[in-house]
Amino acid sequence: MTTAQGTTSSGKGNRIERVIGKGGLPMMCLWHSSGYSVVVSEYGAHIVSWMTPDERELLFLSDAAVFEEGKAIRGGIPIVFPQFSKQGPLPAHGVARTKRWKVVREQVSDNDAVSVTLRLNSDRQTETVWPHQFTLEFEIVLTDVLLTTLRVHNTGETPFSFTSALHTYFRTSDVSRVSIQGLSGAMFLDFLKNRESSVETRGEISIHEPIDRVYVNSPETVAIASGSDGVRYLVTKDGFADSVVWNPWIEGARTIADLRPEDYQQMVCVESGNVDAAITLAPGATHSAGQIIRAQRL
Ligand code: TA6
Image (cartoon, rainbow, N blue to C red; front, side, top):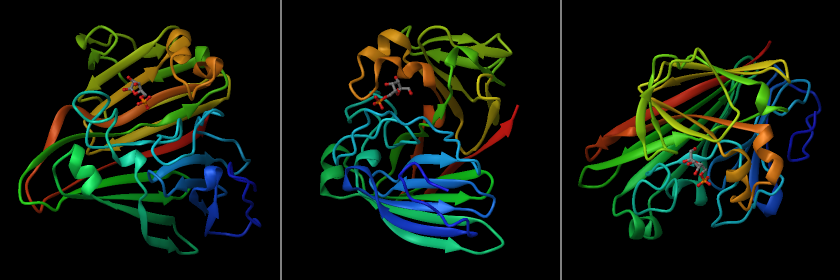
């Protein structure tokens, strides 16, 4: 099997391999005996690939993505912390995705999951833009599903409040045949209409125009069916209250330098996050939130 970063597994069981990926960035390839594989960049603890046993890529990664320190990688699963989007003084989506994380744990047990944990400690640079001490841990557990958990530890002397998300870009070959299910009845803030709030009335949300919405206190599980690929993604979140749905559409894609103009047709973001209500963490406390994503044949 060849992963998105060009690494191949010799068809063995559970394995972890460290490679140098795009832009010379260190990456880790995880293979599970089910045949699923994941590639994560130590820069940003950023999952850039999640592939099926028959080598279908399930995440969108822009061909124009920049793999350089200081720039967020466009696609995959960016980690948003401590600020979602531009809701504050920090760079959009915060600092975590543009920092080099450290691998602190690797686990390969033949009859079970393959997992890695990466850690990021606050430093002078982060404290310049966000004056709090923290340690983040991002745990990736791969079986035939992908479980990811973000743990936030307050290592300082004062409480801090943060918003966060796993900004997942799901791949589709035709966004006009995508249907997002499970959000009916949820209240949402429309970021295209100055955060105007409404209630979702549709059982199935299709995408035929720009969409940028935060569904507040959304159901635990949301499904994204991609009719053109015969696959349904199931996202089950825990510790994340909200679901964000985003597609820039034609106009928006043109304003994003690391997206090709037609890329909006091959991606849909459904993000598990704590966006509407910030989490406040006392000194010494830890907050944990995660999601399980799985791909089912339609
Ligand atoms: O996912 C929602 C969103 O906040 C959109 O408003 C858009 O800005 C997107 O994230 C991508 O943000 P980025 O900073 O990665 O370009």
